[in-house]
Amino acid sequence: MSRVREGEIEIPSAKHKEFTLVMIRDYAEDKILLGEKLRGFGSGYFNGFGGKIEPGETIEAAAQRELKEEANIEATDMTARGCLRFIFDDNPTPWLVHVFHASAYTGDIAASDEMRPVWYKLNPSEVPFERMWADDPHWWPYLLAEKKFVGTFLFTNTTELVKFWIRETDDLSTI
Image 1 (cartoon, one colour):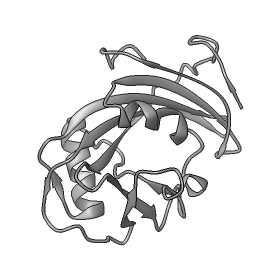
Image 2 (cartoon, helix red, strand yellow):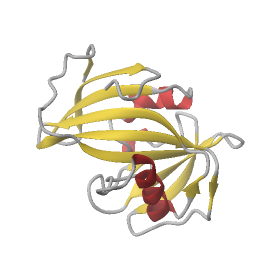
Image 3 (tube, one colour):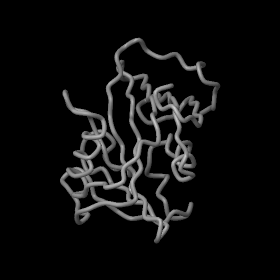
Image 4 (cartoon, one colour):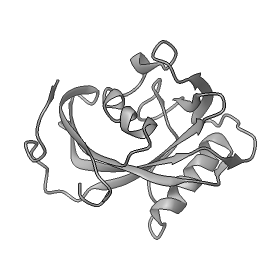
């Protein structure tokens, strides 16, 4: 896997499929809520909470809906933090994932048939990066430093990260 400069990854001309991802952080306890994916794409991996944007739905509404469906909570201070493009050699449609951050929520965290929520202390020995997507270690530092970011990640065989670029920006539409 190699880090490349922006523009050095060929972007397919196909329209992007858009998704959301919400990361819940507990500052007082210095921990983050991740969900173990129980079925479907990414099964067995840990990730934030999110999914597809339905027709007619705003990005923010989709993020809240997915968070409620997967963890039984609603973020009360959700902010946009990143926009990530994913290109898979075995899928002709690139993905655009809108990343959100929240530290306050209502409801009681509960598992769903799709995700099992688990709190992890924010230290390298406890966050299960070995069971997360290969791109996560590259954008997490931006998220944890409360910076906004955009990036593109190129995967082969669905899970092997080949190339990527990432940068800090105030304009999440610049991807």
